[in-house]
Length: 495
Ligand SMILES: Nc1ncnc2c1ncn2[C@@H]1O[C@H](COP(=O)(O)OP(=O)(O)O)[C@@H](O)[C@H]1O
Ligand SMILES: O=C(CO)[C@@H](O)[C@H](O)COP(=O)(O)O
Image (cartoon, rainbow, N blue to C red):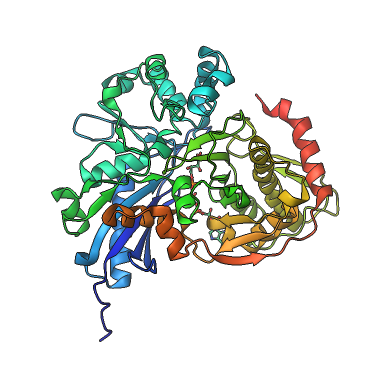
């Protein structure tokens, strides 16, 4: 019979993202990853709609934790803390008993684009929003989703006793406490990153009663309570387990990478998942119209660019072409703008995919390669915007030689890393740990249980360490070709 592990204290970091829940079981002292349990999510909807059932996230969380505990053969009594990091922005509306009134409207649901535009105008334009929230409303932001709900389902909006984000819905299921954190709150567009509090005038504008919102835990204060008796029973864990405030998935990834706000533009991060994101930790409050000016978990900031079409869109091209996702060649003059879900960066919510540059000699592999190029270009262009907003010249060789950290499911793929290297011309650091969001959540959980600093813990654990891939020549020809197609096509893709 195999020996069981000694019961050293462990923590659970949960990544409840768009496509799945991942639960990382981590040694609270060394940061060693003992096991990862997974459970898939279902996303429904077409023509811009994207919804998931919050109860299914709760079931997936239970399933993923049970799988991780079983795999590691760790006794439940060893668990001392838990934290949830979730996909950002989703609108969860609950009745007075905490039951969802309808499926959640997800971050990549673009039906709220008209409401985002109306909100932008109502406050006096992008500058007014940037000054208060750090972000201009786009379809992804929770405020736009709330307005969509008020316009299309007023009875549901009118009866909502609680309004939550995905991660704080789950945190409340665990702890019984209605609490969110500054990072995820900053993705609502009703939280002021200037004042570190909900903005009463914005709540008025949105007709939102503050009583339906969770409290915002102060920056850096991660402990909110312990498991409720019902949650402890459902998870098979002791009721003494500390529950942390948790955060949004991108903020948790920053914690997992040990990013905490000091001179951190040295290491901008590119995440390749359902969303393509680019972010960096900064000490100054960012404000650029094409970016989200999020707060981080610790009182610093996390300016971020986010695309709607990354790994899923490219996998769709591989499926259509009946190719393996790694069976791609450079685009060879073909340009794909893979905006199958509309797009957020650039703000083209009604866009559809575009394919141009075909010849008799074009191969399926080149079309797939062009899809990778189009998706990577869109993320990397947002990186240039981010660097510019932070006062850096993206073309400066001293800036170009700073490594990008590449994370998310796509970072495991050769075609992705090759394409990002070629289109960025930058060195890449690919962390050996694949579940940076869950590991960041685990650091938040360990910090909540022990009182230590989560970023310092993740740094000591070394979760961000990985192989450095040297730069390859920047493929300027492909970059300029895609850039030209996007500039010419954008007016047509607007409607
Ligand atoms: N080995 C791999 N090579 C390339 N892509 C991969 C690999 N494994 C997973 N992926 C991609 O990762 C994506 C999921 O990434 P993940 O960061 O977990 O997404 P999310 O957090 O949005 O749910 C899938 O859409 C898939 O395309
Ligand atoms: O909307 C954003 C960031 O602003 C997305 O990054 C979501 O947070 C979803 O993340 P993934 O499921 O792709 O990890």
